[in-house]
Length: 214
Length: 252
Image 1 (cartoon, rainbow over the protein chains, first blue to last red):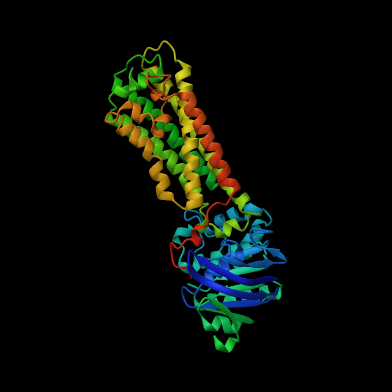
Image 2: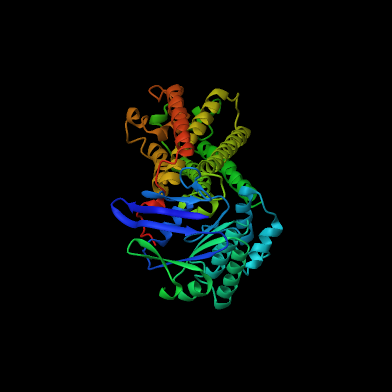
């Protein structure tokens, strides 16, 4: 369970977010919508622990981020452009990442890649990947270690129609397995079809909206 | 596997470059006596010796190789490109320690292959000349100067890149300062040039080799202190707001 209470974030004197209150539970998909520059990514980074709120707090499973823990445990994350090593293949990049925790096998990496529509045997370097392929690889690295919390910043960018459909099914399935997913998107359809609750970021505030209002 | 291939590749480049450096210096001095390798390399008075272009370029290559080898690795840990990697560590400290371990590993590897290349280069040079013997003290002093200098410069580069995202500043620092020491040494008074930490990489600029050189013991102590202090700062404390917290680009 993720709770954001009274969160405010400023950069120097500029207010980005103020008085943000959110509550998110396991097994649900939450949407985050807002214009470019509204603060969606800043909010996601505060939840993940990369940014310290100026005021307020983020609590994940009862632990305060930045105080009890640096980042949420069991977190799968895709924020901004994933920073893969360009001269290595997709599988090699994922293997490198998996070695950090050393919790999953080669087979599970292959499964994650296949789930997102990538061929694990592909030797092509990531620098030669299309945007859509990189996006898929970014999702693969986020899900491969079976996280309980998934934070995805515009995961459908660059994906073709079939890819979007496949990812929607994947996220729905993961939510059914108890994963809490927070995803930011510009596309109304993604929010309408996928998310149970939607948060709108506008004028430095975050408000819970009915899906019809987005 | 890829990492091992990279290590083999760059190690070979460093090793061969160092042999070439030794040969380049031999060419300049027309086969003089090699009794003391450093005396041969730099002449009796380093500050007054002419630095030939070949030697300059070889030194620039060697310094650049260290920069290429370590900066490439450190940059992979840069926070704004590493979000998906960072969250896999238990906390920020573990992540910084992992990055630090990589930096130390590559600095040590660089030095090992530099040392082996210098040995091999000295051996190649000796084959072509009548040599009474090699004086190990200046040889080891030279290696010590390079190693401690690289550790000192390297940890500052590491700190700048990882905590301030200042890759360009790091690269200006090294090989910038050593390049100034090498290229401008004839134009700057020795006493002034010896204050340039870039000169501290070169044993031949030390008081053990030339009069008026930098005091090698004190310099080693300073470098060890800097290395230790910046190491602790780099790993134990997240001193800086990450790049994402500074308005280098508009937040989404």
